[in-house]
Every structure is written in C-alpha cells, then in structure tokens.
Amino acid sequence: MECTVTWTGGAGTRSHMGFVAETGSGHVLAMDGAPDAAKPENGGANLAPRPMETVLAGTGGCTAYDVVLILKRGRHDVRGCSVKLTTERAPVDPKVFTKIHMHFTVSGKGIPPLAVERAIAMSHDKYCSASIMLGKTAEITTSFDVLDA
Image 1 (cartoon, helix red, strand yellow):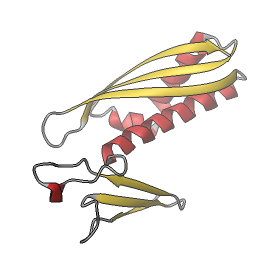
Image 2: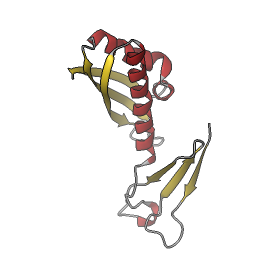
Image 3: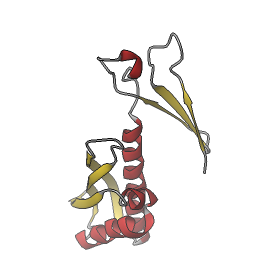
C-alpha cells in the first residue's frame, strides 16, 4: 500500500495548510488545517477535512465494512449500516486519540442483536486494522442499535 501527500499551500493560495493525498489505488483525498486567527499563515482555509478527521473516517469505514461483510457471510439480510465515532484527544502534542466510542446502527430484516454484537466484536478484535492500531493509544468502546427494515 502506498500514498503520496502533496502540500497545496504554496504562495498565492487561499489555504496555507492544504494537502492532497493520492492513494495507491488512484483516488484523491483533500485535507486542510483549521483556520488560525492568531497566525493565519499557520492555519488552513477550512476547505477539506482535517488529517485526524480522515484517520477517524477511515477507521469508521474499516469497521463498518467488516460488520456488513460478517453479517452478509452469516446470511443475514443486512440493508444498512452506519457508525458514529466520537473521540477524546490528548491535550498536548502528540494529540493522539485517547478515547473512541463507536455507535453502530444496523438495519435489516430479522437480524439478531447477538449477530450484530458478534460482528462488531470480530471487527474490533480481529479484522479492522485501523481500530486495532488506534487501540494501542485509545480506549475503544462500542454500542449498537438494530432496526428492522
């Protein structure tokens, strides 16, 4: 796996801290820093997600992918899955995530809550590289709702 990240904030641009990532699979992702009123040259223009937001989004995508795949492999009629991630970060640099809570909402026909609980646990304990990696610095908790759809 590879990725190239390029600074886009050269002279004359609106964003002094903008970056574009080109992934090994050929996709592009923009990132930007938060605006800094005290030192505008050190801040971004709020044109894209922050880099740490993309880490969080990638983790959510990784674990939701696992949950859907595990449920489908169990022949459950899964029709929807979302995960809302909330975090706390260390107050000083490096401001790593110290707590992450993942709340899953899974919808489908007759999906047993135990199957969802198992799928989340399998993702968290075995399959989701991103959450397992972040679990080295953060306490990760989960909860879920199952909706009949």
